[in-house]
Structures are given as structure tokens and as C-alpha cells.
Length: 225
Image 1 (tube, one colour):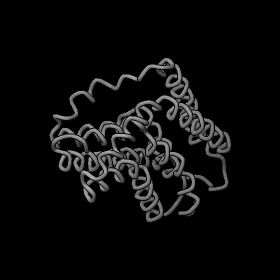
Image 2 (tube, rainbow, N blue to C red):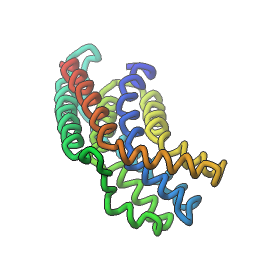
Image 3 (spheres, helix red, strand yellow):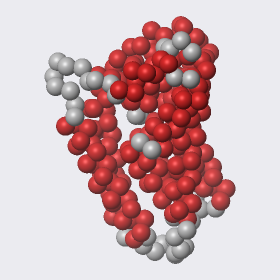
Image 4 (cartoon, rainbow, N blue to C red):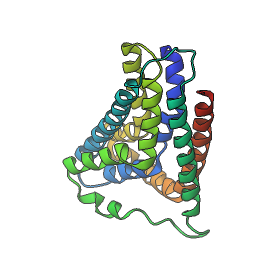
């Protein structure tokens, strides 16, 4: 598989990681905290590292699968994608069932209450966990790593595909952080509005994303046979 088709395969997973309301809300809260510049920058670094480590590990694991004819069926990759698609669909249903009742506001995770007091190292560690260990992101990393590792692409194409995947998956964190570093307090109002909107619509956003990507992943898994 060439570079362009490989990137096309990875795009849905990268977008799903990028459009994750809770990490974006966490980044915004850090940008509105007393040590905004240092902790938000550390959060961005931790996020990038988390995604890079996760997708690289699963790429290496998938690449250990014996190579086959590029035109032949890939049952192992197909099974992995079908299982991941089903799990994503179940996660989507779970998100919908956990949505707040009409007229109420969703309660944020408890760890967000202490986010104002995080130091840079702690912020980086939190971002790493949200990027690499969060179940939804972990499944996206498995899907992306399986795609790259079994694509039969050259080492250079695989490396650049992973780099582009990490960049795309990090844009939703990088844009507000870099925007704040450049514009400072001038973007604080917009960040607060975005935080409130994401908090109110988190369940709906994640339900739609998980169901759409889940069905797409199942389809790709079936096509691998």
C-alpha cells in the first residue's frame, strides 16, 4: 500500500482521537489556570508522546505478523478491525446511555477539579494517559497500528504515515494551546465558550463519532477477508 492510500485509511482514526471533548476541555482548563503557559505546553507534549508511543507500539506488533501477498486476504487484521468496530459501537451506546437528562448539566470527571493545581510534569503525565490509555484512543491506536503494520508499505512511508497521524490527532489540543501562547488572554473568552459547549455536548459528540467509526471499522474488517 502506498503512502496516500495508507493515510486515507488512518484518517478516520486520527479524527476520532482529535475530536475528543474531555482532553480538549482539560487543555482549556489548563489554559485558564494560573500557570497556563507552562502546564498547557507540557500537556500538549504529553498528548503528542502518548499518541506516538501507542500507535508505534501497535504498528510494531502488527508488523510481526508474517507478510502475505498484498492481494491476499488478511484475516488477522480483519478480525482485529471487526472486534474493534464492535467495541467502538458498544462504547458509543454506553456514551448515549450516560448522557445527562434534559435540562441538566453533565458532571465533569473528578480529576478536573484539581486541574488548576497541576504542575507541568503532572500535566504531561495526565495528557499521556488520556492519549495512550483512554479506552477509545487505545482502540484507535490499535486500529491505526494494525493498518500500518499490515499494509506492506516501505519503512519511510510507514514512518511518515505515523507522523501525519500523530499531527492530525493532536490538532485539537495544539490549536488552542499554540493560539493561547501567541494571543494570550485575548482568546480566553472564546476558550471559555468552547469549554462550556463541549461539556454540554460531550455525550452526543462521542456517541456519533464512535458509532460512525465503529461501523466503518467493521466494514474494513469484513473487506480484509
